[in-house]
Length: 426
Image (cartoon, rainbow, N blue to C red; front, side, top):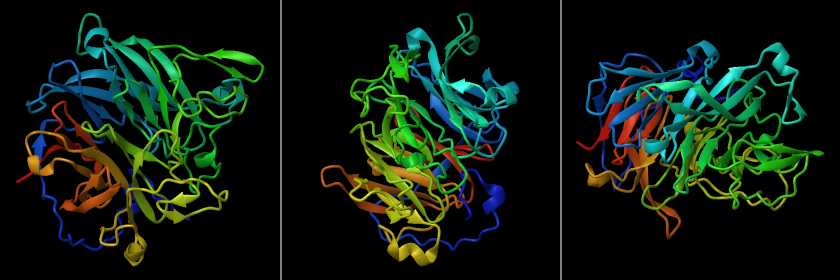
């Protein structure tokens, strides 16, 4: 069965999709204004503005480097902040250096976190991970670093502290974003580990970290019991995590889990006005979805793909429907939650616009499709729990790898070819 993979141009570039016709909508059209035109490297996957008032954007590239560019500049004076290219994090289409997150106290403590992938060497495949045998050929890593004491534009590469290592069975479906939530905890969206059809059933298995939204406390240290021994953690477990109170067991529920049943969460964000957590979850063969994620929620994978049956599951399972979905095939549009939504192949989660420059966009969740390049939006009524308007914001041909948001709430678009744009309203 064909798998729709994030960043999969070689697989999907031959597909021809019909032009989508926007329906009547109470949404503005948007345009893309180029920023940092001097940047030339391909595959930027993430961009964050440092929360220290310096006006510095940190652009994360899949091959393993992070560049600093000054807000408002053309990017020609970009500085290299971090480089792990020699660790070869990018070895297949969906691996690499995937994101950076700044500690809420970054301005004073200089701490930041990165998420990247590695191939295991033969001797590493045979080792034990957390007291359990590990035969998986890959791993995902979350590390803490500190900024250099002598240069604020350089990472101190000797300061690395590995917080979390997750064994990965295949090279794809890694999720990819690290971000601190409004609660001050560090979140990580992990995919199901790859291949197709969730072969290990990770989506519904709370004893594993794959196919989950995780939440940890980087400011404390905890312990868990694994089998017969106590294991110290390099992070703490928030006391209100859904499984924080579970009895420690060798294969019990993982206490890091915040939500589960996610196939490949590619970009999530909080509405800065309401605190709501929005996630774009990449689909398998037929459906893409956007979820409003809540603590302890089960979003269905791999019992469901979008709002549609995929595999048998337990009777009475409390699965949370997506807020938005769209299909890969025109003949399935009438079966979707929004039959007038255009088709695509790989959702890219975005942001609820809360900037000041374009009031017409206020409250619109902006998202896109990697393969077709279309940017869509919808308005959501949090009290009525429903979408009140949805439609096309822009049709354009570039492959969008990620959205970004600055400290003022303005939204940016990153493309696979390396171009970066700011979302504007003409």
